[in-house]
Image (cartoon, rainbow, N blue to C red; front, top):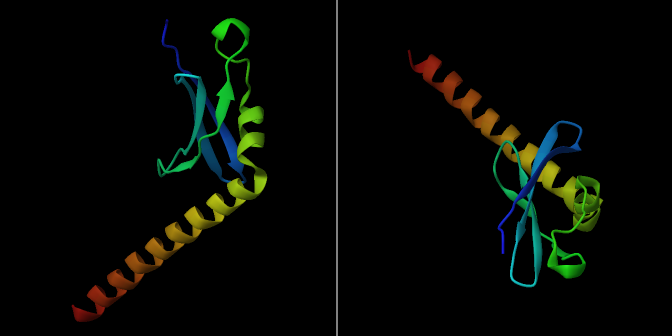
Amino acid sequence: MTVSYLSFRVPYSANRECVIIIKPQRQAYQALCVDAATRLTIGSPSVQRDSGGARPQVSAADVIGMIGSYRLASAAVDLEANELADRSRRISSQLRSRRRL
């Protein structure tokens, strides 16, 4: 059996992209959706093999639909909130260090 991976890079919210990798498993293929910037996994649905065990004919939109728009929106909000909190902590730390000088 030939191992083959299929990869897409698609936007899943206004300013977030995910990388979708479709890789073979024993009984099916796994579609792994990972946020491009943070490398955090958003979802990983299984995709059934085509007839004869071939790689499925699946598009990025199909995988996005399997994960679900609510899950993608929730992931985008969580990631943006974490980035905003990190940015706020950095700015606060810089301001505190400037006051000490």
